Amino acid sequence: MPAKIIDGNKIAKSILENIKNKVKNMKEKPGLALVLVGNNPASEVYVNFKEKDSKEAGFYCERYNLSEETSEIDLLKLIGDLNQKESLHGILVQLPLPSHIDEKLIINSILPHKDVDGFTPLSLGNLICENMILAPATARAVIYLVESTGVRIEGKNAVVLGRSNIVGKPTAMMLLERNATVTICHSKTKYLAGYTKKADILVVAVGKQNLIRKDMVKEGAVVIDVGINRVNGKLVGDVDFENVKEVAGYITPVPGGVGPMTRAMLMDNTLKAMGLSKKI
Ligand code: GUN
Image (tube, rainbow, N blue to C red; front, side, top):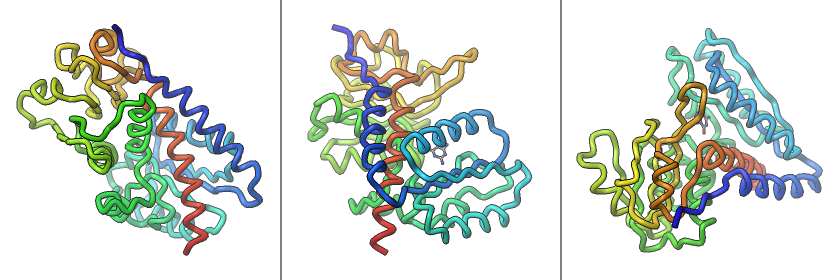
């Protein structure tokens, strides 16, 4: 039987609708700052979506489009100002940044309770200590999508492909926290299929089209495709969707899977960040 398609668009829409209804009744609105540096076309599209979502949710949104030549010190100054603004509860600096800017330094300058991306070392450390404040939106999206299937995570073999700080590592930590047995594979992993074939839950976040073929997937597995690759103007994931769906139990499409859910989780993190601001 072919896999059930996990409809990220539909789930994200209902989360956003919930957030919108909550915000409607709030006197003070959640505030989100979106910072885009340079002219990366993909980044511009992502920030446009985030701005649209936050406006639709009824948030207060400030967007900063900075030139490619912006200096590190000017960007640090801007973040310092945004950190101080009471009307802003979340700050998102779209990555990647131009190569003359130290990304880690910039991310580190965001106050942890405004770190709606969950990218600061403190946020990631809290995740490991199971003391979650704001977890990375993509990792939250992956967990939400797996849980939406009704498949229990506890006791399952979960394999995460990719070890980035923003997706692979936090996703693995969140699966571990839910008592999965977790394996992280990466570019130096030998005989990838040996791991992926054993995965009840397979999360693929590498950025390589058709990396996961049908013969690499366990029958009935939950397959979450985080990859986004542009091929001849079309978006495709890391999984050979058409063939893998013949063996998987559940699978996310690209587009329409993890992407919209990540944005919904970002809005949810902003709402959470507003709650945190009241506690400090
Ligand atoms: N670039 C790619 N994904 C992301 C994300 O989730 N957040 C930010 N800030 N930049 C990104």
